[in-house]
Length: 453
Image (cartoon, rainbow, N blue to C red):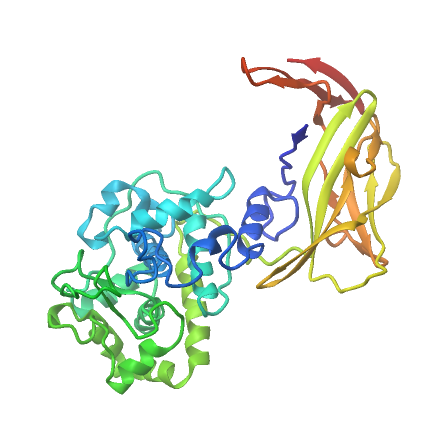
């Protein structure tokens, strides 16, 4: 049996309509996650998790995956030049040449890529995976929701240098952020938002942080605030109150106290507003992180903000069994109202103008609870569940669903289904000698012909 890769008919549109292979995958990665157990989130919670710590010291290394992921995303974006449109969020940080630069010291980038690049597929770029990691790190560790768009394109070569370093002057920092597309007050905000996580590690920055010799901080990390694995406005409150231990504010080497220069560059107006209002800090960070992640090379067009699809078919499978086309799959409904007497129907149109319907198998529904909502999935078709047998010549063109008397059809567009090429049940595979026989059915002029390969 072959699970079909369904291709979208809406490639030129940026609103999210199913099917869209890239957005379908990103939507699942973004919303169908359980804290600490599934997907990217399994590397985040608890938020002091550092995957690459020595055995037995994961929670006492002083480092965290969340901090590394956010730093990696910023360093990837910071090569952007708003004038010529080069650089930005394009995963150029994965190239060894870029990681070897003085502006990118430390092993946080290779560590981050070692985890997040595993989420990249033929439809999801490494750059999208890096952006997604930042969104999940912030949201799952106490921060605000960040609007997420998909469609970043991976660079084919390193970008020019451009990440500011702690020893640079305030004027050079302002100029660097301006080149990236951020004003001076946005620079203050973005630095504060990023530095609510993590700190400065001794090994790559010995001129900023001494060896701490602390068994509860084996990587010798001097943290930006006292809640360095949790999103809050302590980066601002501790700075304003004068209690901060931020090594880039009160470090022994004044030359590298870049946060002190940046935060104070507007007379502390921005940091005071953040200290006085955690709500303002959270909303501003949501906006600035989204801006950072949406900074892409010219010519790259991102999707609209991805939200959960109310109705999402998946696992669609077609096989030809003689003159019968077997069709099965699942459909996920998002935040469906509880109704023990629900009647859910699959309706479909065929190539010959016919309209059909079948009751979804509510007895086999699966309910999943996620941070952003509840999914309820139903099964349709398949030999194990009573089968959904179609006339092979008629096939299927589009689907709709009716739930509690309400038609779900993506605003009248329907759910387009591709049945032009299917595998036959006579196909077989022999694993010992790696030989296979694939019998393929191709629809031509509304009839199916068999070909053997």
